[in-house]
Amino acid sequence: MSRKTVIAGNWKMNKLASEVPAFASELKAAITGAYDCDIVICAPYPLIPALNANKDVVGMGVGAEDVSAFEKGAYTGEVSVSQLKELGPQYCIVGHSERRQYHNETDSSVNAKTKALLANGITPIVCVGESLKQRECGLTKDFVNSQVVVAFSGISAEDAKKCIIAYEPIWAIGTGVTATNEQAQEACHDIRAELARIYDQETADSITIQYGGSMNAKNAADLLAQPDIDGGLIGGASLKPVDFATIIMATAK
Ligand code: 13P
Image: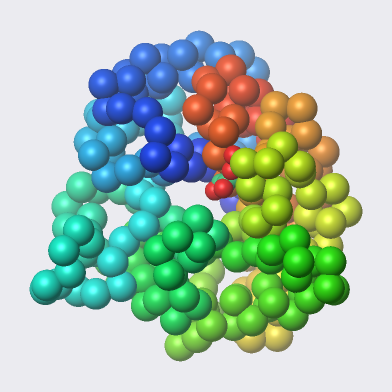
């Protein structure tokens, strides 16, 4: 079983391009110990050139936060995958719950975006996760599995292995309420079981599944120690170099 641990920051709509160089050098200075993960920062499009220019300072990958499901044409404000490719990120988040909630992202647009990214050699970070109400009604597994099924519809096992999945319970995002280690492990395990059902165990075992939702410098080590949690997608704590570095170092074996 070989899968990568990936610690990715999701800056959302925060920071300016002009703040990237200082962030990169502060993050480098704050990583004072060993770690065993790939480091990624996902940020709004205008910040990507600055992240590219500073990525070697930390040895990090660069990601976008969304891409259009359409190839080109009259879609004012959208960014196509070929335009994104020219900016040069290696990763792109799709299906974040904030986009599902505020921008009508659907499971089928997530599927179209995932396919477009794969066709252009950009690693999709596919976000799934339930609401508090769904969890309270005992629907977590069925709901998250249905998101996974549609997101990966028509995608080969070979391509699925190139994807990252982020399990992000909506009730844990930006709330300071983190899923317990057991809740996060159970959900990531259920996602892997669903991937094994869709594809096969070998494919499921090679896909990186991150946890996201109020992961921070204090709780990261315990979450990352869970067998089915292969990294994190981190919002608030990724904006603070020292906190993000602590999460990165929590991956040390
Ligand atoms: P927080 O870490 O701020 O809860 O955000 C998580 C998230 O949405 C990452 O995509």
